[in-house]
Image (cartoon, one colour):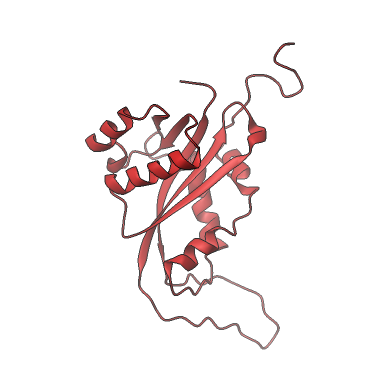
Amino acid sequence: MNTRAWIVFLDESGVSLLRQIRRTYSPRGRTPLLRHRLNWKRASMAGALGYHSTDPDRGARLCFHLKPGSYDTAGLIEVLEQVKVFYRGERVVLVWDGLSAHWSRAMRAWVAEQDWLTLERLPAYAPELNPVELLWSSLKKRELANLAGDHLADVADATEQANPRLPWSFLAHTGLTIRPPHPPNLRKDQ
């Protein structure tokens, strides 16, 4: 494995235009009202959360893909094509779970043709090791809470409001770390 790569965790989750009611504050006697058209549209969202393996100063990168319906192998290949563009051809080690579409024959054939991408599988039944799971929890409790959108674009807009410092806390919460090969206070030639 090339050590100069982005380590990217990817996961999918379902979203809906049905509002998720959460607690909120309002002045006494003024109960907040959410007006909504009861739109039953459902969509799937893929989230890719990346950390550079040798240079944490490059920050964490977060990208989303929103699609009506659910993901299959073809839809996930479309997501990975966008991940390739997002990381501008840099090396990526993609870490994801054992979903059958992730490891299908068609997916493995497509990945075999990609020189920029290496796949790694999370252990079975270990969602606590995937920082994207914490991202979904945070989005659904904060940015998407009480959202009364009329279009899937409203959901996409809300996800862009996520706090940019959270990806590092999601990684820390998993117990996983990414350390550069040299201590940050030493130059490579020392």
